[in-house]
Image (cartoon, rainbow, N blue to C red; front, top):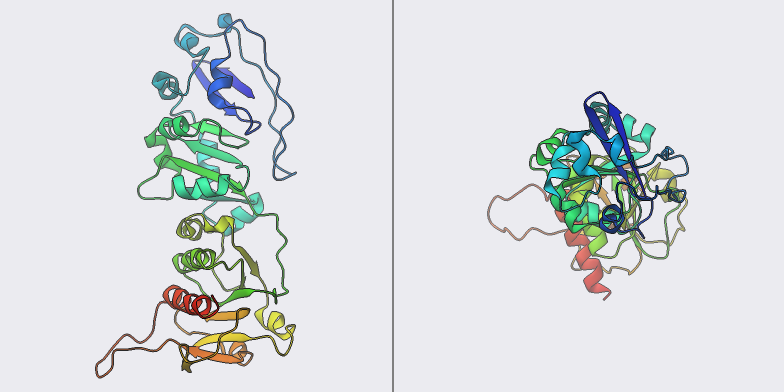
Length: 339
């Protein structure tokens, strides 16, 4: 573990780096004394080999600290003054960088995406190391040793500056893109989803969550489908993004490479009643665009056209179902039928 303190005039910047999840933050920090030995930490193992190197520095001796900073020689995660002292020390450059990740081009350049809140961040931390965590003292007290390359303690006001949520939830984290290679070859051994132009981030995030619930591990997406790393998509997944893989590419090419007897299902308004059609335990379920449904070219490759029937007989009703809701109903019927 390395604690970096830099002095610039009357200002101090404290950066706390956790090198290994095996070290407990509380134990490491509380064990430091002003005149004790200077610590060196092992080289970190980052999830991404191209992650920026964190330069190693040392904790200053008591004499190096100003009178105002002397009480920081042995900080504790339960020391409110410690966190308040450095609550607004997140740099403007860091704030600007985090906010820039709202745009897809910046996310792709940095190979990082944003997650917020206990649930989403917790699910992602369970599957790997974060690049950066920005969190309040309350969250840090409950999570003393989160696996991350960079940890920044802030107060609620500072968290609001970087958060994309109307009501920030104590923690925001940056995670590296998943290293799993995207595949343009559909898995023919299990049930998968294919999305033909689902553009609303909330719908995509909800569909990922639905897939996770029904044990579907792969979703194949057209290039017109919303970006999986969009902050709104990530938030809507409620952590399921950690377990479901999305593959973007040419859907027509993917479908043309499938065996001729592989079951391809598509939800369409002119399809057959899903509750009366035979459904297999493996196959591909295609869901279409929110406004236009499945495109004509993709529709030509659908072997089994399905429809979720309306039961509002004798009166006017909704024209169609929301694509995420339709996905949930369809997946539920496939799993019920083959359970």
